[in-house]
Length: 338
Image (cartoon, rainbow, N blue to C red):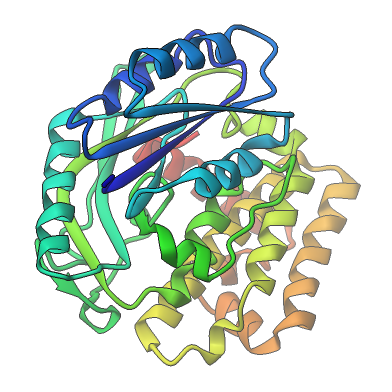
């Protein structure tokens, strides 16, 4: 039995995918690694096949026509046989000692017949160009080393969102909620985390720095200039998050508040990028996005608007826009993203 399936979406990843794969090759009898070659035009597929031949009990390499990151995650989930499912991007890696701790915890809980819906671990921004690392922990917000529910959750700081880097979902839960990420769309990692949240009843936080998130490649999807060039995909994901469930009807107040906070963050990012672009077309799209939220779910619109960030996003004056972009730049420097 495999306790953890790790999907590694790869597109033209020949120069760095080995580090990601090698970081998973520990406790191989417990881990399933699914390399998804997303129609690569370099040696990615060949490298994946070589690893699969070397470790046939642990690694599979699946080849598909190019469908984008979301479709690669869908393919990984389709082929997963592990009890839990984790995504590792091909330019990132795991800390192996932390992975061992996570696996030991999963195995212990399984033997106790405790099927936790979502595990959470820390992640680390790795920015070698500035010789800088930033660890995102949840020690103030989440109980440690025990199963808990949403009512046990305390206050999340702005930088403490649960991202794809920090979450491990129970595989069957993802299938139960019919998670299907859109093809040829970037930034679907937010949907991957957000959409299943209403199905999560039990959580478990392990205070280890598991995921190492590399920041610095010029062609990286989170590069600000690239994000602006792909703003329509960001808006698409933003709207899908608005539509995926009626957040305001969730019974758990803390889950509801957290999902409002998460949606506010994504809508803030969309808004800031549209403002920083500065074109008339993009400023119009900013207004259209907020109007979409207002029309689709007026109650959710009010909740987002009245958060700290959401309220600021409505400033249309030059001073207001300057405040928004300055605050965003300061956050980038503090938290190390982009």
